[in-house]
Structure formats: structure tokens, C-alpha cells
Image (cartoon, rainbow, N blue to C red; front, side, top):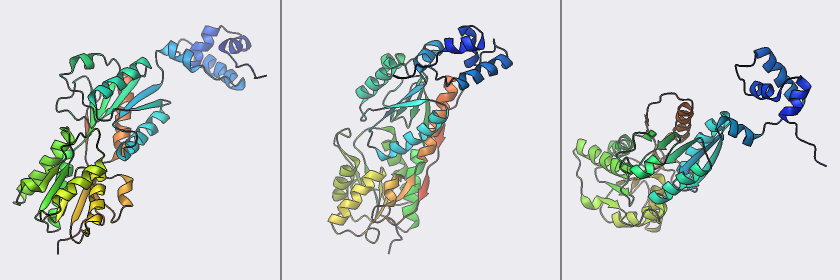
Length: 341
């Protein structure tokens, strides 16, 4: 027979106080003196009392859970961002619920609605497609919400955000190739109208313009396929094939998975990287260190992004004022880029 769980009433009987006093003491209520609080907590520990999470949530109106919406559970970039979220959430005694939006607006709204039904305390949304013009959807979100790398130009004012400086990151990538002597530099983008894709393209164009280098339309390959149904690796493979005969010596890719797809096609076409073609990615995922050659990339501080967003959400839950954050990416030089010979 299983042993009966110790209740607040059991503690109250042993302490010689009411169950209300015990409940308040265990919640550190200022209505109970510090001396009585410590005595009741000591008795609770001696009796191996385990709090009832459901009962606590009814009393505090908190479930101690956070909802996180990512683009894909399999996305290696957001796997590290979620790790940063969980590290901070765990230390605060919060559990994380995870779901995916697949870069689809309707699925994102459905995921947020599901979290509301589960009564989460707050929500973190990556790559959000919600803008301030989506008034009906925005009005339904009744808990603190932080957006990570929002993909709309006009995010709702009621939300807070943590983003990376995509424009700067693209410039770092292209300026690196320029510093190696490359003057014919291309760009591989993804097939959506997201803010990050646009900013990285603009950063690429600005770096070339400031260096006085040529820009040609056939040096830019952006997939026209449905980005929700095409993998980044496939995009990189297909777009590199289109650029292979344009005379480029360097290519900046929208992200590391696109760059890895480009590397695979280079192997198939017998294009030597970096001897014949230098390739630079964006994100800094762990996989980039293990491909051949190791990938030069613009790294986003993924753990910091997740941790920063989670700390921002904790501050909002405590009623504190917060400011939106824009984090700075940095260049990581590896074997996929080299000086032009």
C-alpha cells in the first residue's frame, strides 16, 4: 500500500495552528511572523511535505509554466535558443512547454491559443509573423509575451522583443570576404518575406556598395519556393547550382543550414571550397564546426538570446519595466573562406 501524502492539515495539527496559518507560512506571507514561519517550515520538512502544484496554482493564479513557440522542433538554431530559455526558467522554478509554428501565421496563432488554454504564465515566440495590424489576434493574448527575432517590420507595441542585428551581421560576412580579396560576391536567400531575410540582403548590398564593388542581379539567388515546405539545406543546394556558373569567388548565405546545402552541391560539382569558392553562413550552429571544411559564419549568441528573453519575461511577470534588446553578432573564421588567389 502506498504511503499517504502529508497534507497541510497534518502539519497544522502537529504545529498546533490552523491550516490557514500553515498555508500562509509556507507561502512566506507577511501576516505570519518570521519565527512562526520558520517553525512551520521546519515541521513541514521533517514530515516530508510535498506541495500540491495544482492547489498552489489555484491560490496564486500562476501555473509556473512558460509557453515557447519555435519555427521547428528540429531547427538546430532554436534548439540552442531554447536551451538558454530553459536554463533561466529552471533556476526560477518554471517549466517550459514547447510547440512549433513552421513559419506559418495561422499555426503560430493556434499555438498561442493552445498555451492560453493551458493557462501558461507567459509566452515566448520565435520568428513571429504577428504585426500590430493583426488586432483581433493581438487582443486575445492576455499574458506577458516576448518575441525572439520577430519577422515583421511593425511588431505589436504591447509585446517586448529580443532580436539580433541582422543588417550588421550581413555586413560582417561580406566585409570578411572583401578583406580576403574577393570582388565577385553572391548571396543565397530564402523564399519568404521575413524581416531577417530583407535585412541580411540589405546588409550584403550595403557592404558591396561601400567597398565600390559591382552588384549583379544574377549574383543573388533567393528561393521562390514555399519556405514553410522547403528545408534550408535544400534551398542551399538548389541555389548554389544557379550561381555555380556566374563567376563568383565568394558567397554569403542566409543561414548556416543554407550554407551547408551549398557545400554539399559544391562537392557534387567538384567545386573546391575555399580554393575555388569561399562560403560564409549565418547563425553559428554547432554543426558548422563539423562539416568539411568547417564553416565560417556570423554567429548569433544563441544561449544569450534565449536567456535574455526569458529574464525579460520574468521581469514582466514581476511587474517590472523592461526595454527591448538588440544583440550583436560576431564573425567566426573557419576553413570555408580563404584569401583569393
